[in-house]
Image (cartoon, rainbow, N blue to C red; front, side, top):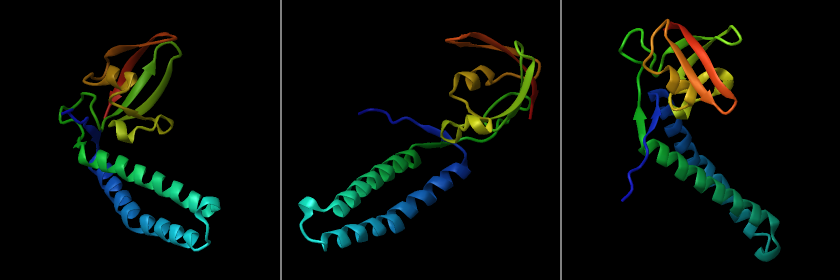
Length: 157
């Protein structure tokens, strides 16, 4: 038997997933079932594009439900680091790119909440891993295909 992976996330994210799952299993599932019922009433199923579309949509829905169930069942709730001053999940970290002298602030989150465009960085990403457990003033490097990037942690909140 294989061990299921754990998905790190905040309690808020877990609650969002539970709400989405409930919606998909109740409201959305009934809507698609109604679409299938209506499409069947059009007659010959072999040439019925409405029926095919509804069945395809039902397959996508069941796949999405299974995916969210897996996330919920294997969720690992993480809270902001209790170790004051150290980078952990829930920390806001101001980082200086030493090559470009460019400063940005990122929030460290679990992999299910990552959104790099919103500067929410996963603790599992190379950049997030490079920061984890460090404190203000520490330097760290990220080895990427384009080369090695060097950063300094300016502030941890």
